[in-house]
Structures are given as C-alpha cells and as structure tokens.
Length: 189
Image 1 (tube, rainbow, N blue to C red):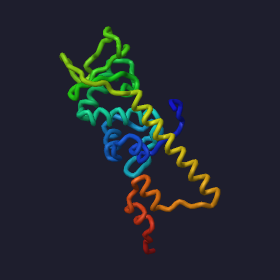
Image 2: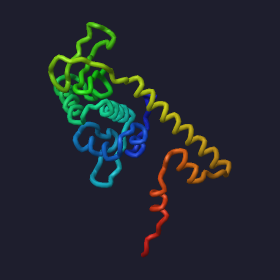
Image 3: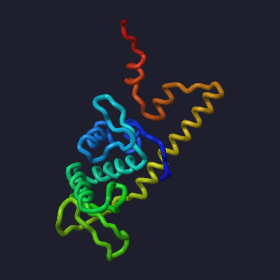
Image 4: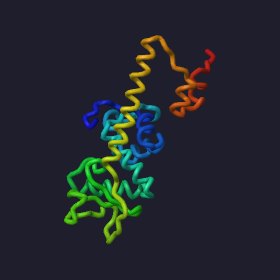
C-alpha cells in the first residue's frame, strides 16, 4: 500500500487517523501537517491529503494519545527539519518518547550503538516506549482495504439493483442523522 496514489479528503483522513477535522485544520494552519495534494484556499475549501500525510497525522495522534502536546511535537518537527536532512520526520524517522520529550534516531532502533537525539529538548531521559511506525502503517492499510472492499460490495449491489438503506450505513459506520436531515431540507426560493 506504500505506493498509494489516491487523494484523501479531510473527513476521510479524520476517520482513518482518529484526528478530528478541527485538529487537522489546526495542524495545517500551524504548519505541522499540511495536505500535500491540495492546499486550503480559504474557509470552506477542500484539502486533499496523500498517503504519506495520513501516516504523519496518525503519528501525531499516537504521540498526542501518549500525552505529548502539539507544541512539543511541533517544536521537535521544526528542530529536525532545520538541523537534519528530513522533510517529513514524522514518517521518515524512528521516534521515541517518554510522554514529555521526543527523541529520534537515524540508526537501528535495536542497536545499543544507535544515537538518540532529543528533538524537543536537550537532557538525560528515560524512554518507556517507541512510536510503532509499522503498526501505524499496517492500521492505515487495513482500514483503507476495508473501505475499498465495502466500495466494491456497494458497486456490486448497485449493479444488481439492490439498494443499501441509510439506516444500515448509519449503524455500520456510526453516522449521525444530523447530516442526512440537513441535506433533505428544502430552501425557499
């Protein structure tokens, strides 16, 4: 799935990564993660993300869930971009964190000779976990495969003349009634 050439809109990226749409918009605004296929051109415009953008967003979500603030994540990313030859450190590097600071290595994670650099601040640290990059990629790939399978099933059902009720879609994917009610309302001329 690494050679995925599909563009993903903000809603889809939100569903894949667990980041809210407002978080994705904020991360774009502060320059942490910006959509690389189609940038925002003002309020209400569409953003289109690449597969690599999704990996970066999922990495930020993972770090946030591990109690790392966006401010520290941004500081670490900026430090790496300014001082090392990486344009996309959130997907290119092996990261390590103790919930307070972020470190990275260019070497082998399992080697005792790897040099770990404090990207968010300098100091002696104890690191209890590693960002599971392989798991992040596998999770995104699995979710995309699930969506693709569902699209194929829907196309087959459509070709056969079978319909899918909104109630079954709402139940299976946790969609709210709010969107469908708004779209069926008519406006007066």
